[in-house]
Length: 123
Image 1 (cartoon, one colour):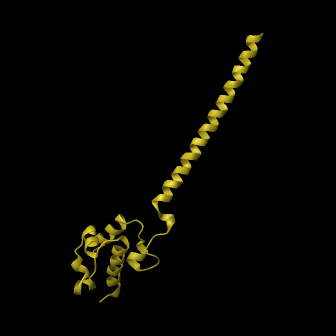
Image 2: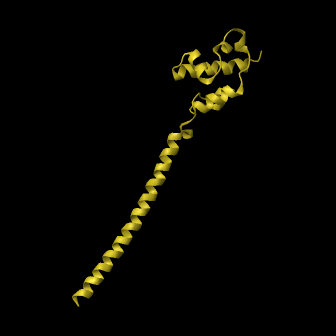
Image 3: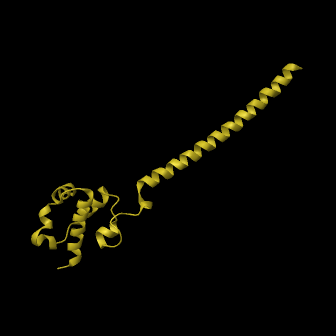
């Protein structure tokens, strides 16, 4: 038997434990019967659709770890959605600061025009 296939199933059960599920509960969540992880079935392959479900539902799980057993179970922090949200927030802040500076220049121009008009009124 190909040991790599069993290893993938073992890693799936590690994910279940890490996420706080029972083995049965996690299998139900991804749509596969837990019986495929027991007895002689644990030596058979698992369908790619179940692997895709895991990687889609749990974006923090590293595909390299799940499929190949390489690296850490969790993706590096640079791949998280939270960082993208923070980056987008920084862009928004920069855009708002730019708008404020343009408006401040416009206000200063209007103040100068008002002062010029006041000088004309005093004539």
